[in-house]
Image (tube, rainbow, N blue to C red; front, side, top):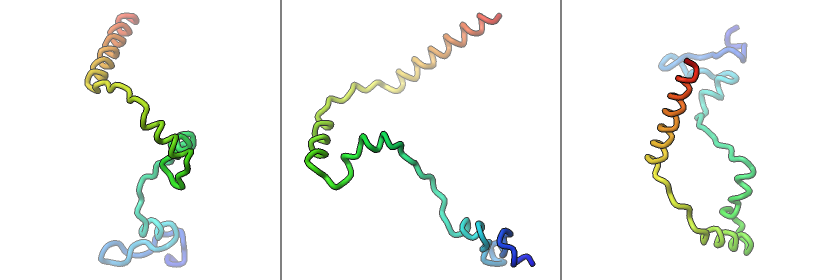
Length: 99
């Protein structure tokens, strides 16, 4: 009876058998789960120049983008210190406001 139900996991675990091999359990046993990132369509449309087939229009757009000046980089430690300071000030004022 147990082997006739497709919704019930059937089979041994480890040395006692082959594992689950009915229905969903079979798929779970023989698949490797990994995360998949689905990129928004808008973002994909903006960076489609990196995909072939390459045309004159795509090449010109890529060259234009590569010539744009880069923005100055802000140090991460400075930004994090500023955010911690802002959070501290907000916390200090909100605590005295309610008392």
